[in-house]
Length: 322
Image 1 (cartoon, rainbow, N blue to C red):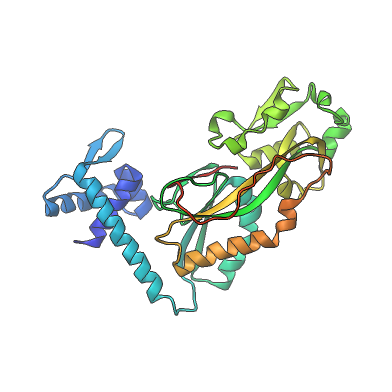
Image 2 (image 1 turned 120 degrees about the vertical axis):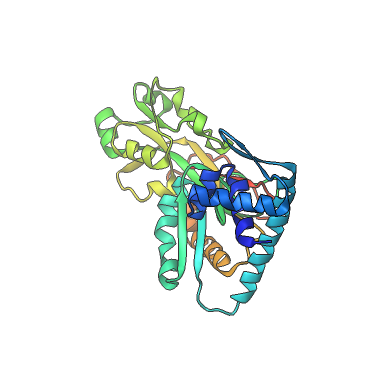
C-alpha cells in the first residue's frame, strides 16, 4: 500500500474534511481528492462519504484508519530508533497550550531550546481551545484537566494560583478595595462563559455578583490588558501578574488554585525531538516553581487541587484553556 496515500487518508479522517486535510498537509484540494480516489480504487472500497459540511468514514474507512494508525506508530518508532544516536535534534514539534501559560511562560522559555538546536522547529500554539493528540493537532498539550480515558501519557506539571488584581491607577481613581462591597459600581473583567470549556475556568462569578458592570474577553491576554488599563478589576494568574509592577493584589479571601497537566501521545512520546521539548517544558516549569507558588497576599485561602503525577490513559481530546 502507498504510504503517501495512507498519510493523506489519515489527514482527511482526522480533519473530517478534504480542505482541512489539504491545509494541514500543505497540498491543494484536488491533490488530496486524487489520493483518496486512487486509494479507494486500489482497495475496491469506498472509504469516505462526502457531505456538504465535511466527510465521514465508511465502515471500511474506519477499519483502514485503525490499520493506518498502527503503521504510522511503527514508522514513528522506527524514526526514533534511527535518529537515536544523532546528537542533533531535527524536525517540527507542535505544543498546544492555554494562552496564559503559552504566551506568558512558554513563549519566553522555549526559544532557548531552538537556539541550541537550529534544525529543531518548535511550533507553539497558545490558544484557548481543545487540542486532539490522536489527530496529531499537537505533539504535546498543556491542559487544565486531567485526562480520564483514551491512549495518552499525562503528568502533573505544576499548580498555580490566581488572585484578584487592580491597577495602581484604578485604585487611585476609584479608591481602595478593602472588601467585596467596594466592588460596587466598578467594572469586573471576566472571560466569556460559553467559551469556557473547562470547569477550572469557573471562577469569575466570585466577583460578578458584587457589581452590575462587566467587560468580558475570551483571552487571558485581553483580560490582563483590560485590568492594566485601569478601568476594571479582574482575576489574574499570579505568575503573570508578578511581571507587572502596576498590578496590586486585593481581596485576599478570594483566591484560586489550579493545575496544569502536560500530555503526550504514546506513539510519539519517545521520539527524540518530542521528548526533548517535553523535558524542557518540565524542567523550566520546575525551575520557576517559586513564581507558580507565589501567593501575593498571605491571608487568602486557596482552593486546593491535590492531584499527584501519573502516567495513564487519558482523553484523546485535551482541553487547553487559559
